[in-house]
Length: 176
Image 1 (spheres, one colour):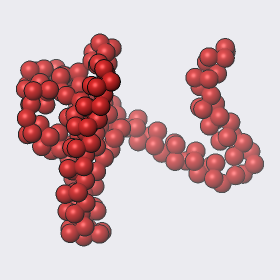
Image 2 (image 1 turned 60 degrees about the vertical axis):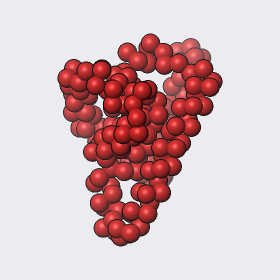
Image 3 (image 1 turned 90 degrees about the vertical axis):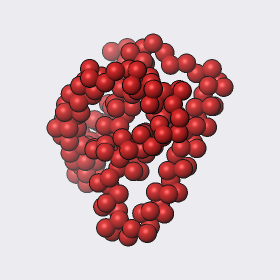
């Protein structure tokens, strides 16, 4: 193993070493970290294959022209509504939203819509919103949504403008 590989996998090797030492020295925090990592990994193994099948079907069934027309660079303000509605139905959190965002990017969605989708997927998912409303109340949930959504849209527009002013181009590797 050369030095470049050691740098590449250094954090993972540190994690493995920490977990092993935690079990040897009966360190409960390290054992808890391992348990959380294992549960997360098992959830991903159960969940992600179905997500990738659905993304594959999306790539096959939805034409690029449809995405470009509704979510592309020349789309209007309704594209933000589409992105928020799509993100609201995203199940599984951001580890599902990122592959969907990549698929949308490949199909021609604009960067502002991709950023809006990812931001909204983090805060506007329907199951999470219903759970929140049942615990802290509908009033608080509506205030949070009506505050957060415009901020997501504004930050998405500003981030796209900033990246374009810096000459950011979507590489062929990323878009394919």
